[in-house]
Length: 381
Image (cartoon, rainbow, N blue to C red; front, side, top):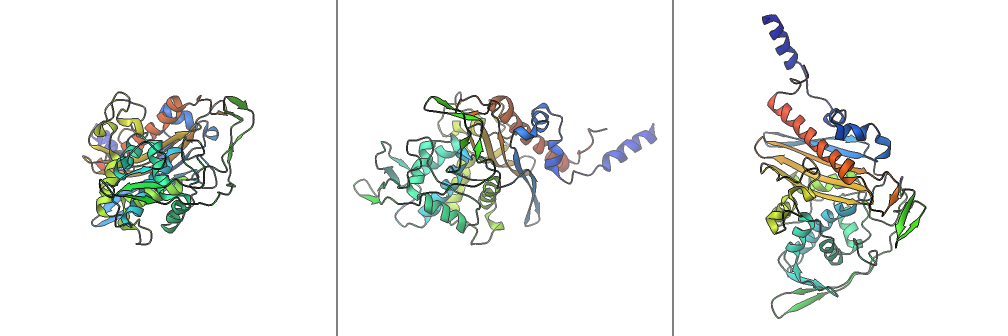
């Protein structure tokens, strides 16, 4: 019996952590993962996972990819709100008369707001109008040139979200309050007409609805926004770990702006006044908790931006367990559109897509936890 016990202990200690943790997790037998991996060809999955290792004063990031290819197009949906939020802060920081708390309205709009309020709405409930207001503040040409300057590429932001004339190249002016009685008018900008994208999968599905009519031909995304996994992950790294990048690659935002941005990225809707019954904790958090409406544990902080539209789901996140000192980054997309028809609201978000992303997050978290605790492999005997 003693010999058997010694052999068991020896086996437990000899199991090394997987060289590729992402590949290891994707081999999981958990139904939510296995269902997708068994039919991977139909889901257009792309994943980048980054481990975060701290050694003394150093931070080491190691990337692991599954099918990441910027030439394979997916529609980025609301994830484009993340770079626009960062760029709005950068532009504010370059203006002596504007701050995050400056009040403004867009010409023709009925809402007076602040840049800080729009930032919160973008991350807490993924508000389209908030994104559109900051889009008017920046303009497409400035958005794309600023991102290119910081090394965020490839990327092409070309339009607003969920409004008529979303691709209008002329922006609307902003009217900004300097005080209760003084206004300044920021001029409209005139932007280039975007060129069609030439990428794999730029036409999707076998048909789509437009103004209630079914058109039996693939939907053409060539004039839509383009924000691949590699660019999403690059932006996240620069915000979470700016010290790992050169000054040229860092965004010109102040420490206060960055802290307020990070707070907005991790905030739960209920913490900023939204009703928890409609906007539950994981409303904008797909990884780990997206398939549950239960309250999230306070020790888990998720700094992220999700998107979903046309059957495509995306999440780009930095996840941190403050109790167990675990942290990692993950960006992923999956398309769930079994009938091949776009704009019919018949997508497998709740049954396939979100359960896959949630399980993926949980499995990666549990793997990191078991490695840290020295328990990896002990349940395999």
